[in-house]
Length: 217
Image (cartoon, rainbow, N blue to C red):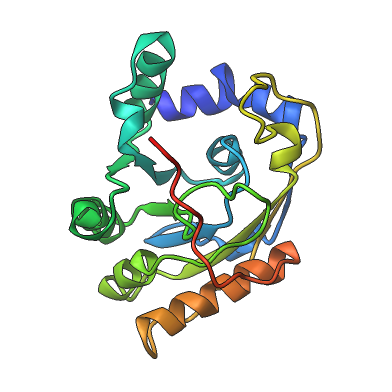
């Protein structure tokens, strides 16, 4: 209930005013059944934009820090993540993230929409970085879930990466939903790279060979 109230009444209209979103390829998203939405990640507002424009409720892997923040902002982030059903992930990597990926697999098996940023975190320089393989490993465990590449364009203009700036700017955002990518064949690494190439084709970027650098705590 909270997700739809936030989308249509409390928060969505504000996001729509700032972003003026245009959606291309919405027909690629099935009306029912499991689906993986794999997007590039340019700004913190990305998840709000996807939640606004997708006709179904997506659930994201949200960094565990959102569930343990201090102060008013920490409480608001924790509440938003909880009421919208986001999946906490420990970004230490390796086995630390296995529980989160298992939860994502469970979501798909129940027919849900899993939204994931294969880069793992926001791009600090606007480039499309190398994708992590978790998205493919989960998708292969639920082979009837199509994997849709998504390109987000313009969100970093609305929500600039400059951390000294707290206010959004009004801009124009385009969300391009591509046709499903077959990630069920070949090596997991190669399949992940194919997915990143498909995302890059939607954004006009060539995927890089390096992961997004880890940010200092």
